[in-house]
Image (cartoon, rainbow, N blue to C red; front, top):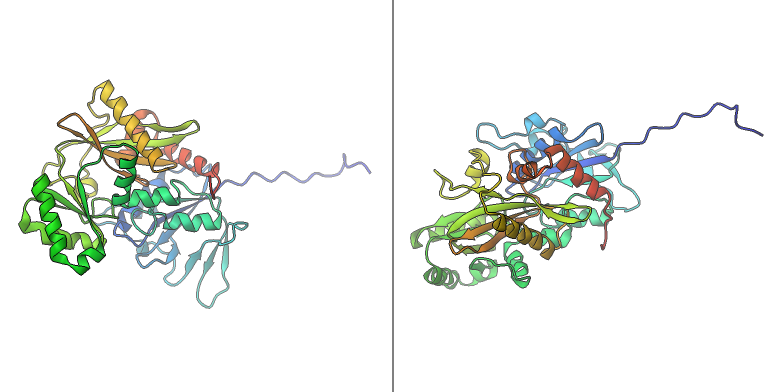
Length: 385
């Protein structure tokens, strides 16, 4: 029987990819993560993507939040909290644990779990431990859900400054002098550990920078000018991480480069320079996020210097097996050497953050940057690759 004259069912419009934006988290960078996510919520193309905002409280509970980027900004020098945007005080969001099922579920005590629909890609805007360090990436790999940014190994290496430096050194990248004090060493013999730091200062000179080994956003870092400030600096760092890193001060210019993965591989942005911190002792949390010390984009470098630092940034991206995006931070020393300080696998991502600014100056707008990262994640498989 012919079907030509039978009424035809209208074609269903293609479903827009659904992006779960995950932010907040258990680390000390909870508030900065929210500021980053608020900026992305404001700029993501809603005609192209459906967005599901998911916050993680400081206690680790996953919650649905209001889609209200205006409430995710720094106000009166204070960063926002996921708890203030949570749609319920006792419900929680559950990601799928079956790679064949990408449906997110919302559950409240005493109620039947509610399906929230499938998620096509996760955009993790988490900074610091319990999110940027490979833990969330491992969960998403088990779930079979694509996600923006680096995988488990690169995220872990990018978070742990000790192993980051070890990887860079093994690939021939220059790093500055540093010393690691592990928690067991400090617990067993504080005086011996302290003596190692003092001997390090005797070899490389004061000031030193004492910092948590696995934190970011310049949180918990102290510039120590002499022995009198050492114990307080150690205690400050240990609030955020029992493993601490001690670095010798490098004298020179502070520079940054953004790396973004394109179809043909990673490319580097124009570099930026972080000017002297003025009233701040160094480029600390307050200078970065509260007082918004502006960087110089592009950095005033020669063509040869620009090409060299861009190549080194891509080398660092490849050395750590990164994916998606990275911000690479360098010093240009007084001797003319580029020394890599660290990489950040999920850098600050507000429009005034250095990473988007560098790409804006390179020709990739903020909305296009978001779109490129999501598309790259959608086109990349989970699992071994």
